[in-house]
Amino acid sequence: LRAYTAKDGSSEAYQPGNIPFQPEAYLKLNRSELAAGDPIITLGFPGSTYRLESSYAFKYYEKSQFPFLEKAFQAYLNGLELAAERNPAIGQQSASERASIANTLKYFNGVRKGFEQHQITKRKTDFDRSFQEWAEADSLRNLRYGRVLSQLKQSYDIADQTGDVLYLTFYALQFSKVLQAATLFEDLENRQDEERWSAEQSRERLMLFDSHRQLLSSAVAVAEKAILKDLLHAMAELPFEKRPLVFYRFFEPEESHELKPEIDAFVERRFSSSVLTDTTAARNLFFNTENPSETLRKDSLYVVAADIREMLEQSRENYIRHFPYLQPAQERYVEGITTMSEQKAFQADANFTLRLSFGEIMGFSPEDAVYKFPFTSVAGMVEKHRGSQPFNLPDQLLKHYESETQFHNLPVNFLSTNDITGGNSGSPALNKNGELVGVVFDGNIEGIASDYYFIPNLTRALSVDVRFILFMMEEMDKTEQLLNELEIVAD
Image (cartoon, rainbow, N blue to C red; front, side, top):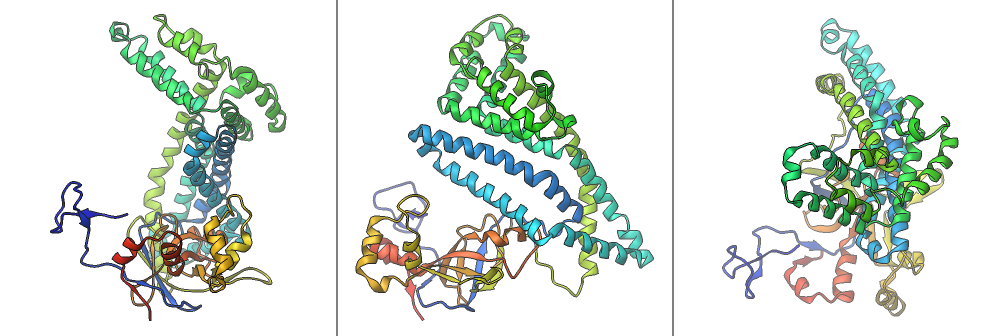
């Protein structure tokens, strides 16, 4: 990101003579050697972590949140990838979204596996048991903290009643263009009874139809079928009493494994004939002056969408009932556990504010007899090259590698013990003098569960080494003008 100003440094609209902004303070880039044990400082505005929540929260996340978010995001990613295969133009447009969804899915997979591997919920349950014993050991403490855990349990018991349904129905409506299209017809149906609707000169009808047409213009039928099938498969795995009404309307079996082939056949049979997917049928309905309700209620996919939306509203209404119990109890819980552990420093939660983290360059051992070194090199990157994504290096870099042997050991990335989370991507990694030595771009998958329960021996920040950044600018991209504007130092 670059900013430009007038020649005197003042702000003005673009002019050919504008010059790069000259800030009073800036970061120097230090290209000196780095080594294991060197101190690293990260600075950024990450999102939030959940380390100071109770065991009841963790049980809820593990049982009623993670699995269903994974199913919804996996269904969407599968559809996006299928659409990209069938239509390269749409694939190019969705590349960024596919990468974002894949990253989100990787996060939930990593957190769930971390919970299982490290028995995080059990650890938190043991901690809460100690907290309850500590509270009950003193009458004043018992008065202030003795009922906190029971109140938290009550809160998450309420959330657990419909949390799984809420996540699946919410993301079904977010991810399926077919289900989204139904909202346009709901608007048509709701306005049909208004006197002003028939008096208007079809402008609003035209706008609704145009929205429907635009929505379908970016849809690939086979991908939309796959998304809808996978989402309905996930809902079929809910307990019988939690499933949307559609499962009672159109399907006989109760067991999810028996339902899945019926769902697939149903979607294939109803997809092309639905007003939600057929622009010609949609046009006829939007511009017909008669009430559309009868037609819509005979359209199976519209009924599916309406049932899912109704279930979303019901589950949301029930879900929000847990907040009045949760918020005061959570505040008292944090107060209590920090009072109980006055001599122990807690790993602080991220909370969307500026976050400074101190660490050092260090590898880690994810499992017995396996050690991941703190630095990667260009040689290692070339070893992974396969000529296709995600291991596809540019020809220019490969040719340079073949001709310049001293280039082989150039560091590319490094690991450090800094405590980061989502939102830290792009944060500067600084040395002890406050000079830029890297840029944070990720956290390791083995330590991702530290958003909930900090695991210091596994949690690492991944940064691209500034020496590799400068090499790319100097040798590959030839960005002389940018390089001239940077202050580059070496010890």
